[in-house]
Amino acid sequence: MAAIYINPRAERGGWRPAPWVVPLFAVAGILLVPWILLLVSSLPSTHASAHWDIAWAGFDLALALLLFGVALAAWRRSPWLEGAASAAATLLFVDAWFDILTSSSHVELGVSIAEAAFVELPLAVICLLLARDAERVLTRLALARR
Image 1 (spheres, rainbow, N blue to C red):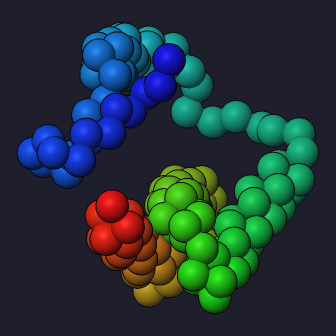
Image 2 (tube, rainbow, N blue to C red):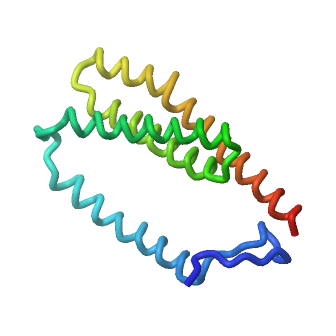
Image 3 (tube, helix red, strand yellow):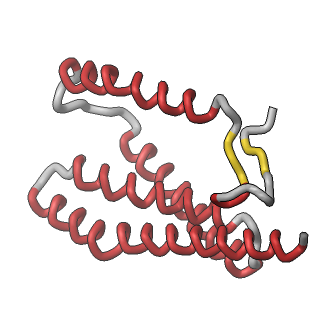
């Protein structure tokens, strides 16, 4: 039960998803809307959390490992570059979002916005460009082998 069917003669990239992929993800997105509304209306604006330090350290450890993974995949010219760079970009966007929203003072907010604007978001965009370029190169190589 493959999720992607490859047809090199087809238009628009030569592949198409399995018939269940589009409805599944569309329904999942639609079902999240009422859930989000429920959360916004019922959750408190503040929350004290045990292990806050471990949560952030674990997240940053995962981000560091992904960034090392991007570097290693690029150095080895690995097909894993596309996935590693996409995942790293995602974590960088999430890191910027939560750093800004969880800032507890004006100084923290300023530092978080500066980090997002000058480090996290530009690096996330570079990761997305790397992923796009890796995908294009891998597609060209696959077509050349046929």
